Length: 188
Image 1 (tube, helix red, strand yellow):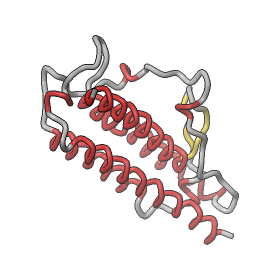
Image 2: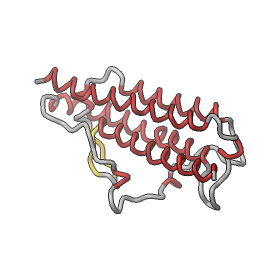
Image 3: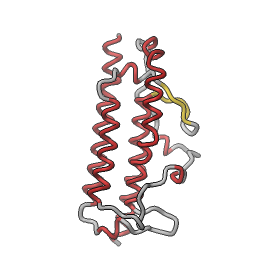
């Protein structure tokens, strides 16, 4: 059971890391032909521009990865005792839950702004580098341990490190879909 249990989580992690890279590459491919000023144009007062949305996705990972590292170090010994037990590798898309708190990005603001712009290449490099750090964290960790190291999020509840990675994908997707809508507005 242990070998199958370990592989179960590792396959999910590999799939999620692939999706993370695929989503990132797709959004930047869409932006290649967009005029730079449109990437920095705020759609309305008080709303983030495309570049700020992209940087916010980076900031979220930068904020949550230390917590993942801490829980890994702290709870791995307990997870070793439970590693033969089943664990979940999926969670519902929490951002689609009715009543899920939205508009809380102000707690993780982008580090760039229209007043302090950077190129699209820099945005891509910075987000790619952060995703590499996420990959580095998950690489070579047994899936059955990742599936038993848990953390608590006040808005989501209990989840393990594999589900936490999937929540990151959902967060990225939410913002990449927003960017797609903004690009549709730009093209009008």
